[in-house]
Image 1 (cartoon, rainbow, N blue to C red):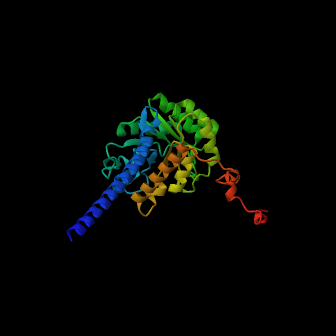
Image 2 (tube, one colour):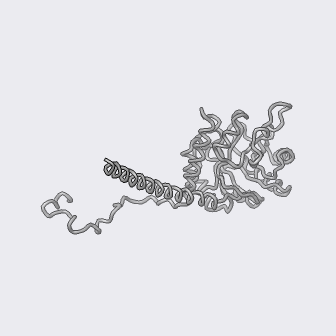
Image 3 (cartoon, rainbow, N blue to C red):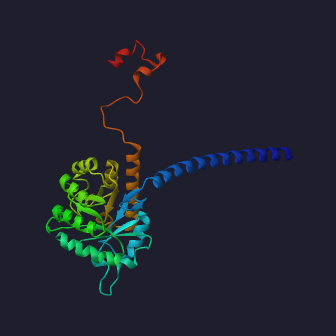
Length: 306
């Protein structure tokens, strides 16, 4: 009885050891994979002027409850959040700055500006309140389609750069205007993917691709991105970051959608860095000439290949 018992115990011990070794090996493999991904993220830095960020997700804050901002930021793992000046001072009402964690970089915008002078005035006030020289230039004189005014935006960029700001410029994707903005002192160009708030995705894809080839600044897609899949598609093109607001604010679960966008952005960036295969004609995954003679069709059945 004791020998049988000892034999069972030994077998159990061996099985347990094997299982432990297998688990250890599996865990080690997983850890190596995780380390590689983490290293890729840590060495892949978004640079905006003198600022550096590891996250490529810029979170908007304009359309949802202030009480949900903290959870959205955490799920997005965002390091930058945009905000309008009107939400920072509401006559004793809730102030958005009270809901944003102190480690998050503020990117005030010039929302409401209809020309360059108004953009400068708003930016100067925002710098005093937010204590940041970063500014997102938004100049919209069109109240129907809400398209950015590229001419006034370029003028505003030059004025802001002279005042010591680090401007990121929201614009309709057009090469000559983007060059003017870059020459005026922009640290990033933010072309719209589709009209603001429409969630229609990359309707301006061909024009954004031109900017990616010709403008030596970070290209950040802003406006129109309506789903994590669309964010992923934009990142696969090689854009530097995504700014999203409406698609998250209108979701049933804001925090979960912020998380989904983060994963889409990260997946798109990793795919871009890995090097996507180019589209081509159909080809066999295994070359036909590598097939051994023994596996080649018999003459009796060769007619089936005709």
